[in-house]
Length: 500
Image 1 (cartoon, rainbow, N blue to C red):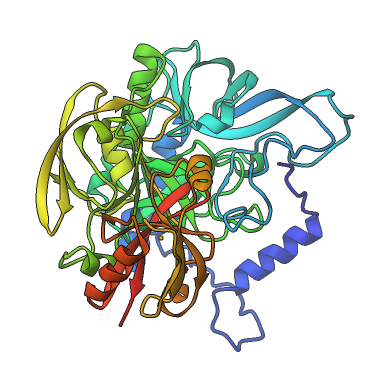
Image 2: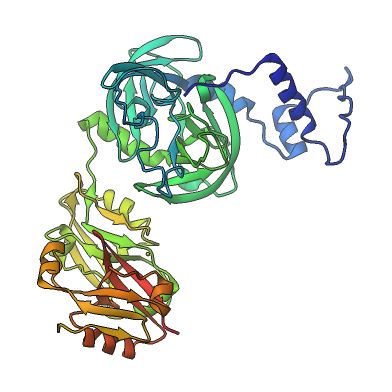
């Protein structure tokens, strides 16, 4: 991404604004700066922190700043007239998540440029990284070096090295580089599990190419799940990070790295108060695997899950909405072989509680393929333990979080608010559905819950539906709420319906 060049007058104006920003609203005149008398000793960092309540980061930066590096990754990008550049989010602009999560590594394509259709056009991206061993191993983001032909690492003392990409894991967005050097400064690795929401954190990186820029903020949330990022429980912060910060370290006040800055929420491409870091303990596991084998093995369960809410919990006879609701099971997959069914609520894995659907994928991915695991599910208003042999994650999904929510007669159910009919043999064959009722009209409670014409109702409260009469009987016996398992296009999801 090209950085905007500020003129001297613009810089002066910015400085003036910065100086006046801290004064009480309503003061139109900037007071003269206070001058410390020669006899007044300057406060030491610890004394300053104690007096003002604001931490001093200078010692941290002096000690560990030299271990933070600037990374230049040269790419050759195939240009076409009808294709967006690689740096843009590979989604439809009309998609609601189009601007939601953006990597900020300065990847190729920012800034446009010439080049005819099909022309090979070199481009250069900028990112950050940090040295984890004195013999030259460096951690950064996978998207910083993705498809790079030449990777150059620059240290704070201006030394430059050609780096070798030891490995890159796109699932976690972690990459390991190696430079031929010795006695290098290194960072200290911390434990993100010991950090708390509200604590101060510091980022060092190269936003827009400005080397070793230091920014600070607080931890806003932990174990944050993001769309299409199923395997990483991100640390959310309000630390200002921008394109070029990708791959840089996130420090706690003890000077320990607790995360790798990876992505931001942005509608403009720049910082808007929401940044996300990969927990360093997750990154170290990936680093060790990449160095040892060149790849990362992850477990796979073979289910699609969705979040629980109180209405769904009531429908399944649970006191509180917890666990991950199974909306579909991959045929022939590990979960199917173990007997998991749509409508099961996974509440624990090997005795470890599953808080929600967003935490399950990372829990499953952390299991070794081929090992046996105990899956605790809530089924038919009671807990049940199942033994499953964990599969290996390749292109299939482990336990992906779905973040969305008879006879030949047709019938209208007034309480539910749908007109349905059984599927025709042709529809069952084309859609590979063995059963289900096609929704022809939707209003009332069903419409309020989001049921649409064209949806196929597969089950009620986890019980398969095969006929119109069966659906009507289930609805009549239900309490104030039910959970409908529907298929829409190629996805299955439970939809809670309030009948009250």
